[in-house]
Image (cartoon, rainbow, N blue to C red; front, top):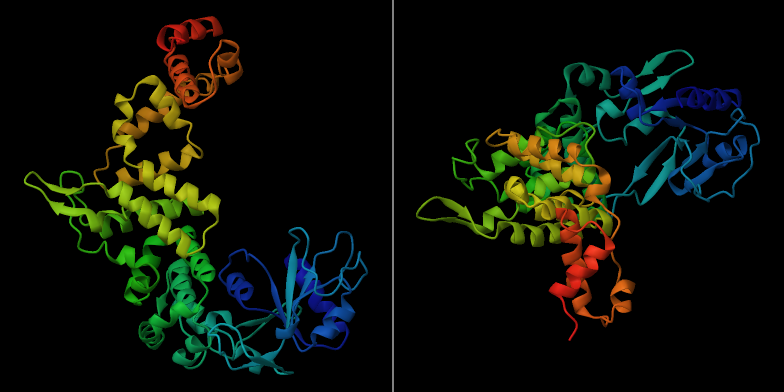
Length: 457
């Protein structure tokens, strides 16, 4: 995509316009990281861009933004199959965002500018951006950096600093407070003191941001490889009690030292975040974050030890509230809740009979359940005996032994004279258990078992 973005810049220059790479891609290139995408800033208006590149998506034209898709077998400025202006791609297409230099006026909703004013000056354009490290321009044709905000110095020093007054920057777009934390965690940078104080002061205003955007930023923090650092910064920035008060409630909640020598529930959760694989799936990350969310409200000191009676059931209800609040998809919610609901079952895995064990390990996405168990152990007592036992046992079982073809069906029961109803489920489950235990290996044996255990009236 870098070559394609450069070819767009070259085409814009040939038509007499200024054009530069801008933002995160410049930052990442300077850090010798592969950019996720490439953005271009230019003094060409959206209309100018669409005339030069007929196949475009004018998805943000009111803000001066046009997406130029990477054509197949065509150079920029050619004429691949055109799309109607304003149409978004029907399928995922590699695109480069081309935005007109502008200044933003007013942010009534705390997220989007009320009005934009196009500009010819790149200096004016970068002044509206969030952080100095994201305000750099790169002329790839001359291999020259344009730095009007001190971004190179902050990159070298490892500092997250807003462009201009931090309170004003965050008041314009409240999501920038979460982005400050995420960038600091991802790059292991420090949030500049005035910038951090502004986040702390304005943190209650994060509720003006849509829940979906808050969820997406938190998910990135959890999955970008520095989750523990991100949540410590969220706490320091006073954002954690605003976006996830249930996690803040874990602080100071003691645990029985014989099982959790590492400390309280918050410490345990942070240690677990530090163990995340990279890459980490969003559902595993959220399931891990929330697996003990039911402990604070169920904490009690019993005569023998600290207990959290019913914390799994309470945790599932709390996790469901969080998932609904942050508007997770139904599929993601289902998996996150399953992770919370089943994480304590691993304690009994070595005592499970064959049928129970096989049903346990064939849960959807069982790999995430097993990974959460491993992370949970590593963040507490460190004993991976059960984890190893399960892995070895799964490896020893052929797939057909875990998910065998049914010996009988409901049609077989009807043919034998049984009437459909609640008893069907009980009979089929009993036959499946016998099959998984190895006691029933044929249809004949299954039907004989049924006639003995579930005789017809």
